[in-house]
Length: 153
Image (cartoon, rainbow, N blue to C red):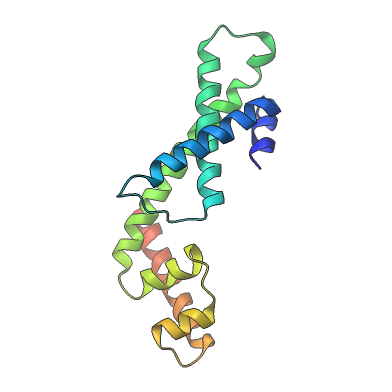
C-alpha cells in the first residue's frame, strides 16, 4: 500500500521504503509514551503516518527549485494537503460527536468499527438476548451519531 501510494505520487521504491521505515520508528516512539492509545488498526495508523511523511517530503521538494517534470505534480500535492486538512477536521468532529453520543452507543460503535468485535461478542458484552437485537441497537446508535455529526458540520 505504501509503495503504491509513494510511486503513484512521484516517488520511487527506495523512497517508499524510507518513508515506511521512518513511520515504523515514529510508531515505536509513540508506543513508548504512556498516554498513547491506538484507536484504529496498526495498518491504518501506519498508512496515515506514511502519507503525512510523504506529503511533507513532497512539500519540501516543492520549496526546492522546480524542475519541469515536477511542475505537474504540485497541484496534486496541494489537493492532497487540502483533503488531508478536511479529513483532520472531520475526524475531530467525529470525535466530538462520539463523545456527545453517550453510553452504551459510543462503546458499541467503537467495539464494532474500531475493535472489530462481532455482533455476537457485542451481544454478550452488553447482555442482549440475540445478535439481531445488538445489530438493531448499533443501527439506532449510528443514526444518532449521524444526526450529531451532520448537525455540527
